[in-house]
Length: 226
Image (tube, rainbow, N blue to C red; front, side, top):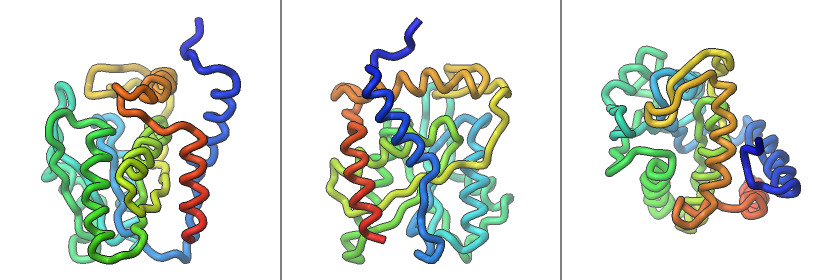
C-alpha cells in the first residue's frame, strides 16, 4: 500500500534535496554560528540534538544555544530542565549563553520556527548583517525541521542563513515515543509518518511548507553568502 500521494518526479526531487540537507556543509573557517537551536523532542529522542549542540558549544562553534519550553500534546518541556541537561553536557554559561523561548499554544516544529525566526530577525535589525543559524535534532526529524525553518525565514523575509546539523546518532531499532507523546515505534518506523507529514504540510491549512524548488533556490542564495 502506498504511503504517499507524491508522484515519481516529486519523490525524486525530495530525495535529492534530503541528501543535500542531511549532509549539509558549512565552511569550518566561517566562524561560530550566531545561534544553534535544538528542536524539541520527546525524552527518548531529545538527547540527540542536545549532545550535538553541547559538542558545538564546547568547541566554541556557537555564540548562543537556543531551546524552547511549552506544552506539546501530553508532554511538557521546561527551559530549566533543558538548561540543566546542557550544563551537565559541558556547556559553559560564561562561554555560550543558553537562550530560552517560551512557545505559546501548542509546541510543535512550526510554532518553534516562528518564535526562533522572530528572535533572529531582531538580531538582524540590530546588526544589519546576515544571521547564521544551525538547527539540530534527531536524524529522522532533521529534514522536516530544516524545511520548516526555511519556510518561516522566507515568509518573514529575514536574511538568515540556516544550516542543518544532524544530531548524535541513536539506534534505529530502538522503540521510542515521538510526536507529542502520541506516536511510538522503532525509530526506523518513524520515517514513513515523517514523509507523510512532508506531504501534508505543503497545504496552506497545515503551514504551507515550501516546495523543493523553493528550498533549492534558498540554498543557492545561502551558499552565495559564504
